[in-house]
Image (cartoon, rainbow, N blue to C red; front, side, top):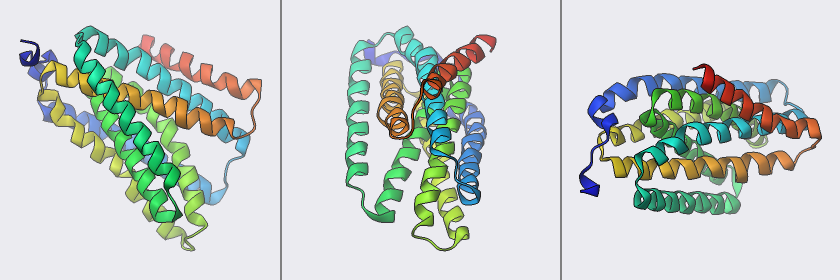
Length: 246
């Protein structure tokens, strides 16, 4: 029966067998958030530099989605699960966009960012369930993304919080939502294949939304040039090369 098939990954890996490496890797993007926060407090990067790095991050995230998550979904071949998971993913991300658009004041902004980071952690956990290499490559991609998330959140908090220590503590608290999201994803490893495919499809939609509706949109609000735009392809080709070398 379609619903009774059990994923080979579930037989090979208990949740704790996936959890520890995944949580260990989340230390990298958490450190990137804090690095971005400290950078913002010391000296905020120029708009051109931020735009270039957002193009780079978009290319890396897109490559990770295309080379690791999408092939796994196609390999397991569960069309109905793919459709349902993808539709839910699109709905959740559009709802998140609506909430971010209505966010007013620091509390609302932090709530929206917190949900964003939690979803990133969930997607990272799903990537590790798809495979170790997928998790590692997505860690690279999300590290670049959250680095500049740390920069922008810190800059906005600095306008309302006088204490730099409180700003750093708040950003650190937000960053911990990433390993929390990864931990939430881990029990999925023991679920039937169609459920895993549906959740991977959800994660794929979340990554595509991140590229098209966040990173590139924000990047194009800043100064642009052919060299800055080329950073998208640098990121994409760079991750492809890393993928092949691994």
